[in-house]
Image (cartoon, rainbow, N blue to C red; front, side, top):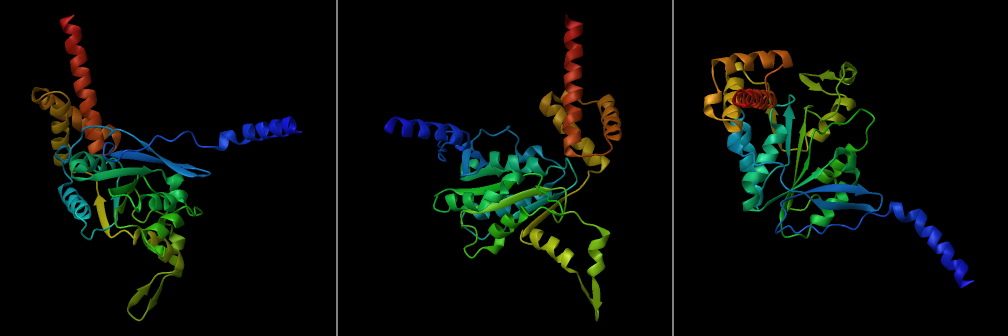
Length: 292
């Protein structure tokens, strides 16, 4: 009988083993400065990751106002002063994600720790936040490229953590998010059907109020917009010199940078970096071929 029970237990464990999370890697926040949160049916776990690159805030041109506001807000948070959750919204490739990475590189020595949460893992965000509550370090929990569809209820967990729960987020946790959408949810003409004029005041319908209610929980709104051509070329020159050297920037490079942005259909920091990588890489390749 004992042998039969043992066999049954073994078969049961074989069935549930794939549901169990792998052995967790212990995060040492005195050594690690960044981690990703991985959701699991039994909760979730933190996985330490090295910083992606060495980008600094000085590398990001054309967004000085946004950088200053974000750095001031984050420094206040790190010093235990009042600070706001931040929503960085705007056009694609305009520096929203880059400024978060540069912020970590610049402020890690001041105590900043960054945890990235994928949108699909937001359902377990309250679990993560509670794990961090009694930790002596200070964390920015970051969700990149955040947006929700009209029938997506995952945003309710985010709303609850931001401002909806009785306890609220702990004082050592701040939430930053980037999005191409100002209000994080899709907007349509039908949303305005419930809007009405009461006296001289415009009252939005329930659909609009619901969509605004999420983004409204972020106290810091920073808009990122397409570059002017002058700013775009300045950023191109910076990255060409950073990836290669100053001599790589020339009238030919300037003309090619304009053409590159035209073909891509927009001017942004991402486009400038991509142009610099192509220009310097091709230039070095041809130089090497001539030397050979």
